[in-house]
Length: 232
Image 1 (cartoon, rainbow, N blue to C red):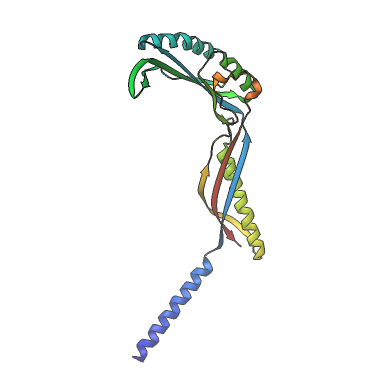
Image 2: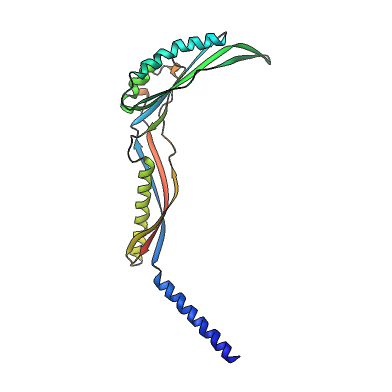
């Protein structure tokens, strides 16, 4: 019995020695989180136009809308600045009803069509809105602001988040009188672009004629990362 007890104690001692050896081999590390946020002035804007015509018959409504919108579409295709794009939705026609004392009656047919002008330079936004408002759209609004191609707002926010994490890790390493080593791992926890800050989304019927009624917004993005660094 005594011999078996001595063997168990010896085995435990060997295991403890192996565990200490593994701990010594593993690099010391520090794990920190970082956040980054960026707000960039918008360089490009998307414009939304909505047109509608109501008539007694579906065919009449659609033809009147085509006569109004088709020439505009052709004119826009040949006058967009470089890099801009036109997207014209298909024409849609639907019955237009009226409610009178709880009873529904057919009042006519409404034809609708929307147009998107994508990636217009913000510097020219006022001129475009004034020009398009003369075409009497029922809706005219800025649907989006963005930046030009290159590093996106999300990428720049991620870079800031990493720098923030590294700065925090460096401060902790200095306080422990250690040297901050190489990056061991990076985990992207959250990247969000809440969307552009729209300064203006006007109803064309209110008369958006002045260029300064449309002000450029900004493109914002936020990012959170978790980074593991070696300690030397």
